[in-house]
Length: 314
Image (cartoon, rainbow, N blue to C red; front, side):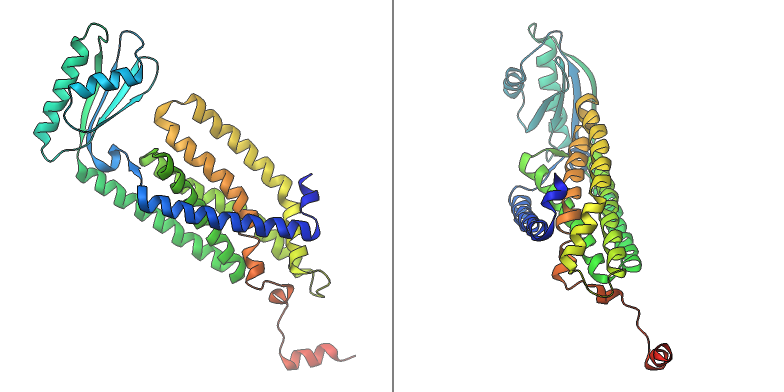
């Protein structure tokens, strides 16, 4: 079925429509990131993190309203289960006032007979530690991007290399845009998933790029157009790409549904990255080189005049 849509001009038209859609999504993601930003977790911002359980099931909204009456600062309450909750308190100007707020609401929920909460753990994470983690994480991502660019520059002709890099940046921006739009907590596990997305997206683009290069090399007589060659390359790798993506998505979906809240952000980021990475390897990594003028001539063997004279001799 998919091979049918990739035949001839229909396949080329679909690839260019997909590229246009990607450009629109990237612009929307950048707009969202600029206006809403990311919801950084305690790993980066610092503050108090408290986990507690209740003796019976309590509605999240009711519990949040009750805590708000006994808390003067900003906080975020999330449910980890039917009776397991996690409360994150934003760092205030004074650590002492933050600690006092924590004691107030903790006393209220533990002494209330309807809630009867039991505090499991309470810890303070300094903002300095968060700043260092953020800097180190960004440095790791930057180093990974540089290594990828060097690898692509050595392995591919520059047009295919540019297509792979643009597809890689596209995938990261869309994942970050989703986290900004939904205000999902961005923590160290999510940052680790971005590094995994870099590797996965690169692998997908290289598979398609290798096949495009092979077909261009055997088309030195220019019988087929570059668009047809790229469509044939995508068709020949599509089954492998879909099987790889499908099995990986099944694993990530299991982590998302069964591993619990601590790994939910990681699973969402990786799931989204795999989907958009598969899409970009077709609509960007393989299509952008065509717009940049990729053709079989780029892989013709260059010979000097003397060598050409020897080749032409009977």
